[in-house]
Image (cartoon, rainbow, N blue to C red; front, top):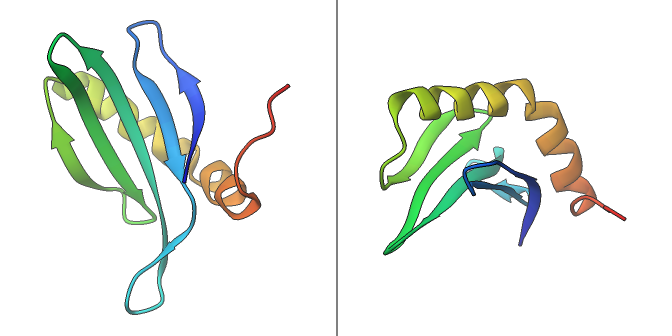
Length: 91
């Protein structure tokens, strides 16, 4: 399950996953940024706590990728907290 946390002016949608567990028991959350394009999406997926880009497809610029990585780093506690709680309740 994914939970939306932001929509940016260029149409990019930010979502985060629930808590996942690797075979070694380490917990992770994946944060995805997707922007609709004429024939699909630009996509960037970052996994925390490693901050590794686990999926990259499309035409995000290096500057955009750097910005998204900073958003993820600054919000990592937020993403883990709300992934554990099952998402955000937005009225």
